[in-house]
Image (tube, rainbow, N blue to C red):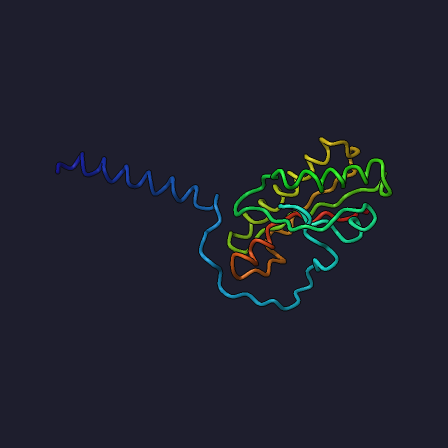
Length: 177
């Protein structure tokens, strides 16, 4: 092989490596993290919430006051997309906050992620999840300014296997300030 072909091949490999490294942080790794402590770290508890769709966890206070039934709820890995399962409970939330017992109150949406990605990525993914729910609620009639979104990323994640990680991937729907 002549020198120019060798350098061209090496340059192509280098460009591919640079492209892969540049995109490396865009997806969380699939590998399981090291074991994590489930001890108290001062983070807010998810106690008082029940899963109610495939992607949302509506607080017991809202479910009780709005008459929203229980069901399971989780996001797919590396996803911030709502599914058709999400529409019914979120429509009930909108109805309750626009015409029902919580009319005029605000909703706080807290996006969460499982612990497998980098911290910054998980914060962004959690925010994307909260924003997706917020956009849905706003499009269905929530009053402007009555939807607050934030992310906890994987700060409160406790899963150590797919079942636990699935529980970590959600948006908590809570009564706002």
